[in-house]
View 1 (tube, rainbow over the protein chains, first blue to last red):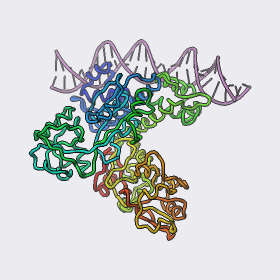
View 2: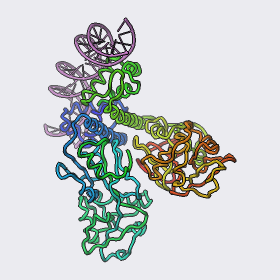
View 3: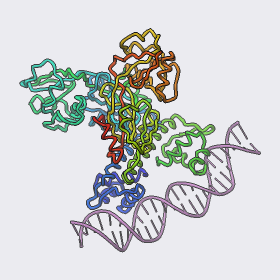
View 4: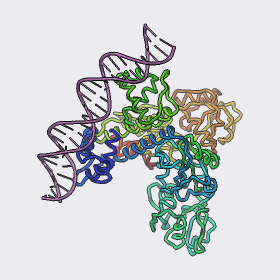
Length: 295
Length: 295
DNA sequence: TCGAGTTACGAGCCCCGTAAACATC
DNA sequence: GATGTTTACGGGGCTCGTAACTCGA
């Protein structure tokens, strides 16, 4: 289970071809073939069906392990590299769209900042593998509960902000006159599915206590990262959306009703590798008032 | 960052000696020395101080990564090995002491079972690396919240039971007459520190919302795994203890007061690798009524 | 001087590329 | 026969062991 072999394996599985993988990795087809053969004899399992080239069930399983394994390997290397490198003068920040809280924007230094928005899982990965110095992630959680983040490497998370959640509906919607809404009222509604900009529907289902996967049926799917668009889509009646209050600069045709039960908040956390220095440490100091969790 | 080199490195760090590590791994000192040198040049860092042989700060950091990396590697191998092996006829169960809920014991098959109790972190590890077919872990959590387990590999967790928590005090204790207690009343008390048998004090601090580490000061430390002993120690006045109701067959000199706030329960979960078969699947079917989480 | 880690060097193995064989469309 | 995977084989590099060297108590 040499990492080289694993890397070859995941590449072949992703591309569905030995030769394509060889091109991408800078090997010959022959070498790739030998790598796969070595893995298969080592594990005593056939990992790939040939013609077409596709993972067997065991191979699917290995893919899950291998992905996380290679990720952690990169993370370890990147983390150690920080020890060798001189302190950074600039700062790269990876954030989910809704995590760009005004408090954070206000605290950023005037120069030397690169900001990049990524989908949710990409942020921890970027911080772990050194693609970013700091990460900002948002999500729903019970008040003062830490977010559930995939633990790719030892990262430290600090709570940055918590704010109430609100349901966005068209102004004419029957529920728009309410002063508060419970999640239970909304299980059967159609919801916008905007995993990169809004809050994933899975989280709602989980919060509502139905991990089985029923309820909160998706309507339109939006694959962009702009919260304003999500709010506009909801106002136009394409489905409900749950957003933090501050992220919804309202059009006149939308109604915003606070979510009352269950008690959930929109939470933003700052993620960093350990022992930040230079501008990273400065920003952490300005933002992090209370420690959330050590992963 | 070849796993072989990492394994050599952690062994050297653990034993504090190149030659001892060489003996343990079946290499010559020379090879070990070359392994370490290779790692150090690869990463561009000095990992070990020689004479005495001890990790540098960067080396300490690598140790954290390497430990988890090697563990996951073993886990992946063990998981894949299950695909190749014929279905098991026997069943090995790893459990924390308080996780042996009567429901579980009742559901065990009559023959072919090996039961082993381990400290908390050992259970997920054992299941992941194939040391056990199934794991049972207990912990405190908010009602219907999954436990926070270290994620060493993709494991599936099923909720088995939740039951109320109670504080064990000596019969003569000033608080023993109360009909309910809040955690806030008990921050300043002395607590038994019994990480392997009772509930770790860190969890109490976290539940109380003070991750800083204050409060819940330890009194006597008990390193065994017997819950009965913990209850007896608490009854004898050596410190308070928090236990699930059912785990405290009471001596007459002890008082049991239910914990009322925050709303916490003692929860047990069943852990298994995916797609169980044979007796494993049978037990899972009998016990797992609701799925807790997929890690 | 002794214990312990490093360095020099050579033998063997492993890994990859070339090239030919083989399979499938 | 075109495309794509496997197998045979050979060279170069890597890894480990032997043994000589170095350093500190």
